[in-house]
Length: 426
Ligand code: ATP
Ligand code: MG
Image 1 (tube, rainbow, N blue to C red):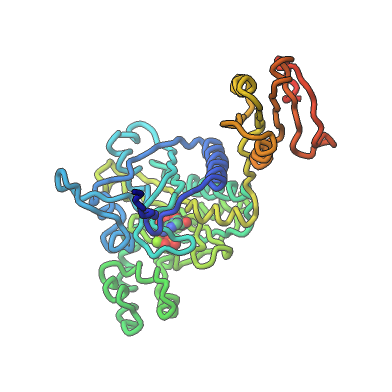
Image 2 (image 1 turned 90 degrees about the vertical axis):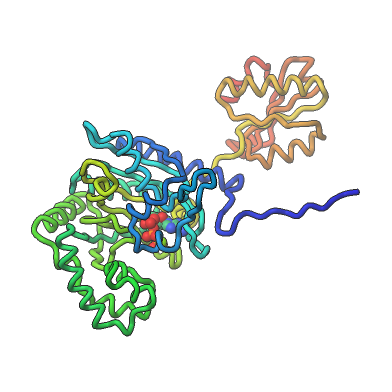
């Protein structure tokens, strides 16, 4: 009797990265790691699970993320409330405090990995997605603010992306925000009739966030609201002007967007986003800013900091439109064989070639030459190495070039095994 088992699908909004696509991710990550190293950033890896209070305190109670997007559950062993990280900054800062990383020096660090938000899945918006998170801890700027932005512009260039533009704003310091907040609440009270439910609820608890709405009916109200930028004092202005000057030096264009407030409470001073029109409504590929108060808020010794996060899925979507990431073949050399002695030899030849630095697939199992060659072709290999009874007897290999190069396509040569790696190299 056979039993039919039902298939089990992935959780909604959580994507599989399959072969081919996975290779693209890998290539992309290599480019990204090279780029980060070239600015002296070092890798850190924090747990995916953190105490819920890290995010409620760090990101802010009255934010989309904390109010409705977190995957939170109770640890059945001890009753702790745990949350799957919705972003990475809070965890990096917690770790920096816990391990006293800023004790005698500032730190440039980065982390790449998944984050989780319970949102409505659509293109560019998933429930598990990935971020490249970069943090400069203990730096007051504005030189480091500019460095981070220049650095991102270098990455876009490296990836061949021309259609991403920079939006910039300053959120000032707490006192400036307080003055603006009072003016803003007065404005919201005047326009109470156009506020949606979120707006009504947040107008006193987090009025700035009311302006970050995506609701078209509230755009006019948001456009006419008092601008935080106009409430900045001399010091905040000087910081912002310093940044703009350095961006000018680097030839980086930007647009001042007074509506840019970002979805997390911890930001102050410089905030920025890189956006594109090529991804539909999920057009922000990178967001970041300064969070000078967060380290203290999470129990550390006060220290300034700035960082950003790139959305990997959105950026890869953009890269696939410009074909800017080369995808290498499955292997360089594919070894085909016929007969038990040749199969044993094939395993040895495969190891020999790997010693010499080649990537090699040795055909597994036995099959006709014809079907093995089909596999060899599909693998994208440049060369097939062929081993049969004759080759075993003469300790040679037949080499066939599978890709057109200098008219050599299809030609086959007999080569002594001890010279094989050298010949393939040339
Ligand atoms: P959005 O306004 O699009 O919701 P956000 O302000 O919530 O973005 P951040 O918290 O700044 O996003 O996260 C940094 C980056 O991570 C975003 O710019 C975006 O590229 C990516 N990102 C955020 N949420 C998602 C998601 N649910 N799926 C895929 N990528 C995401
Ligand atoms: Mg969001």
